[in-house]
Amino acid sequence: MSMFSTFRERASSLEPRHALLVFEDSGNASRFAFTWHQVRQCAEGVSVGPGRLMTSHDQEELLAILKNACSTTTSFLPAEILSRSAHQVAWCVPGKRRRMWVRIGTQTRPYLVPWPTLLFCVRDGRLRLAAMSTNKRPLPTTPLFHAPLMNVYADTTLCNGTAALPSGDAFENRGEFERIVFETNFTHVNHGDTLRIRGTREVTAGAHLKFWRGLHDKRTDRFPSTALSPLSTTVAEWLDGSGR
Image (cartoon, rainbow, N blue to C red; front, side):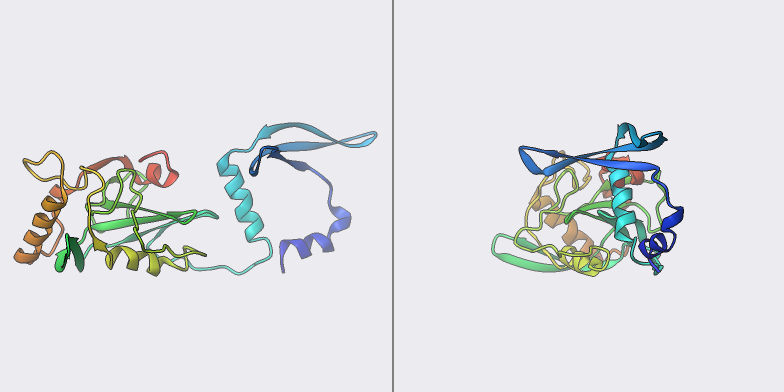
């Protein structure tokens, strides 16, 4: 039974308590603002009191309520899920040895190398990536590092090139987002802090190739945490968008 059918059954006992006003930008129909008001009972009926501007967090919570209003099913969240809201889902993929495809010039080569633990965050269709120095489930205060990968911007957004990111429910499409990252052909460096290499100030595509080829040749099992470049933010800040 949905909350709406419950309301219909109890309509006689319902009283107005709050009102939501929607403001639309006359010059841009896609821009809105919302204010939340208390409704007061008076001799003339009801009156709408002063309102407060709803924050983006308030709006997300309201959207989540409306989205789930007609459903009473409860879904189980897998252990790798870090957060889920109406607009965002974030999860963790433990580090392990995987193939990495690197294309420099006209040559594409596969290397079997240790990947670090990666955090995936999809918000409104945009994918961001960050790295951790451990395979343990992170806490909100866990420090993050730049994903040590080419094709990732300094703000942690993936440069997906010609690959089309999945549309629809990001929660259900997590595997597709992972496939785009793990099966991509890495081609270029988007910023100089992707790796921390001794004696190197700004990491180039050539330095990346040498680094990953070295891990491949040595058959290294775990990604060296000393090669991770600090992102100067925590998991909570990054997920909230107040970090990078």
